[in-house]
Image (cartoon, rainbow, N blue to C red; front, side, top):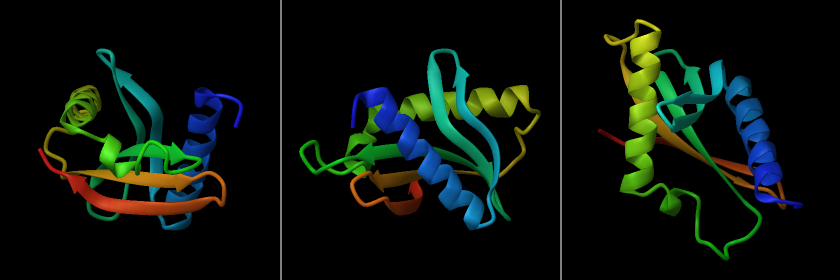
Length: 117
């Protein structure tokens, strides 16, 4: 892969396609609020879902889920709160998922309810 941005874009594209095939409605991508970002905002049958996508082309830096530490989680939660405030969704059930994408083979692993607030 050429660079980090290209890897991230490819991973997010694969993750979005994966979610759509499973019936999720994609509401936003790269949603930014106050310097924080949610890679994908989606809706499934029961919740508004904020998805962090971690694309990897090897295991040199560990798994994607390992890199979503408490600091990263706080940023995602802040972006989620911003989305909920600006879209009048404060009474909505929410969930935080992580999607790992192995770029070498295109394998997608969806970790539902990866962390809670």
